[in-house]
Length: 473
Image (spheres, rainbow, N blue to C red):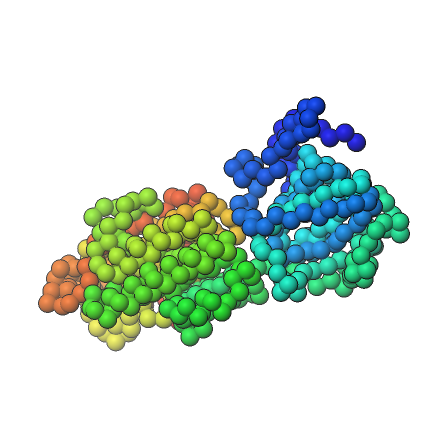
């Protein structure tokens, strides 16, 4: 079969999710031929993942009929033929609905194929002196072999129609003894690590991912953000994403020397360590940010608004955002006024109402509540839908309110008079107290995340539900 010259670079999808066949432009003349075997910019434009290859391997096969595989490895591969021609067979050996799906094709040097982690790869040479090449995005090691998944070349379920019968082909003894599909343990997906799993958002993330065995939850005692050992002891190659819901949030204490050190250690230094890990291993980092990165002199705040923090807490969060923004795969989820399981403003107001207290509450700070269950759902939506990386505002929707408005709503919803709540300015409320400066405008513009298909519930609906169920339900 003659190789076709000067084809247009194009892609063809296959029955196996993530497996994509590429036609490569090959330019030839009387001297031979030339091709761009892998061209990151052009291929990414066609949808090839930015899989960051780190090693290039070549399998040379002297005789036609040499047959290798079916091996599913714990890394992605971009495969092509340097010289000769092969019959390729790929079987999905990952956990999921597509387990066992098969795709076959003949490949010459004018074609290439992308094979995601966990998809079994096999080939049979159709010509002598065939060289089969592949880029991989992890370094081969002897330890990694324990993470391989194998399928027998003669599996009856896959029913691969080998051009040269296996009885006449050249096989290794190991390949002859690999299990049938019914005996294969599917390769599990890479894991997600959730940090800060004991906080309000962390508890909501635990709830939304409770049935997902690929998700690990790390509370403060499980993962010390300040310890180099915590980062070194984990095999990051097995992770696809990190959700950083951990933060130092004691806004007023951050203005004191000890609090300032703690805020920067957790909100900046630890975030930089996470960023280094994520960048080195191609991990998606989801980082939870705050309305405090703005000074509150304008609004609603857009994702592209220049950062202008007032106090130490806001400055540390803004610095963390800047670090995370440099990671190729990142989501900065900016939120405000978080309400979940644990101590929070709504729970405090409900307690005051129950005790008959008539509080003075700030009435010139404007924003929206962000219920932890909706933040968690929004984060899961971003990761599942694989929308463009970047910054996304995420709060509940509805009309912006002051803290005093919300407090009055809590009183009313719990059967107490709204006028028990008295409004007071921020300046008056904190008069004579050592307190951090607060942004007066905290409302976040939600158009960007809505455009991805995620529609946050209104804050008033969530507030009513929250109080009806009980603050810690």
